[in-house]
Image (cartoon, rainbow, N blue to C red; front, side, top):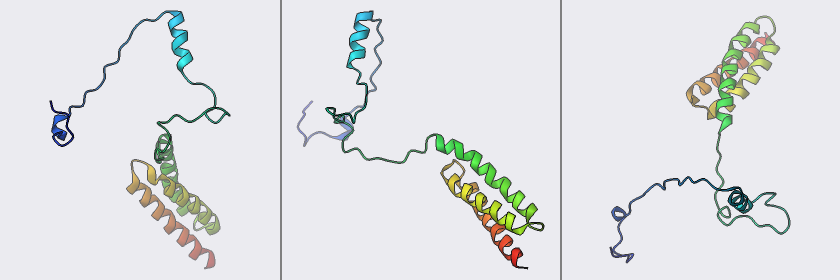
Length: 137
């Protein structure tokens, strides 16, 4: 195969996943392998960041937050019911409940159900507006 860059096409490249090689090592070999693993702070004096990390873009990874905010979404939906329930008796309290529901609904936009989170946020905004109007009448 010609390795000239002009004749190299993307169809000529085949991606192959490396197969892991497992082997049994002795205690001395394990100690040598463990000595190669860097430990401690990368910010300590005399140490440098690994070259593969320098210049890499930092992106937002929701991770556990995405699953945690599913509970926040459920709480936001429940807060709509509590806000409506407290509206005739204590309108200022319903405004406080709806404000918390709006915050939780907005934070839940990173979940797997962003449309439901948007609906919860809008529902809490409506309860907030009703509580505001009700507090003056």
